[in-house]
Length: 253
Image (cartoon, rainbow, N blue to C red):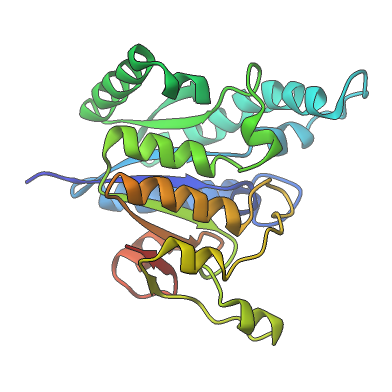
């Protein structure tokens, strides 16, 4: 039986549980769910959190532009982020691997082929790719997007079955419901234009995304024929509950 391939994108707010530190408990929660599903699903993970990881340990002097300091923080934090994934996943019998990508990689046919081939080999050998932007040479996701677009491009390249974006809300809310301070989730939708009209461009507190970047990611996935789910990653069992349709989230067909 062929396994369903899911690209799971985890934002900084999810990984920190909206605090100032990465949550080992949240990474363990993700790993436990992946372990439960490993016989029927393949996971590729795009994870933010390198800058948040660094801020737990260091405070850099501002000897350059703010974006350069953030790049330096990402370089410091990325090994810590990977170590936390490796340690927590290994205890659950899961193997991890690191892939650092940049947007320019998706513009080069040879690079795209190398990404696809490498990740396919990793997955076939039961290694879970943990993907992040190569922040030392690129700043796209630091400035805007929190890896949402990177996740969508990777999902399209690998032709996954589902793009699941974990954020800090129960999916995407109707604008009018937010204005009334009574959030109501848009559960199913097909028209990206209709959805875009419902969201604001407010960015998330720890990440650089917000709902607008998730709409843009869903648009990329939709063009590749891939369904996108925007789920609440702060909740325990959010992957399992979404797959069983036992939670509230947005499904973009």
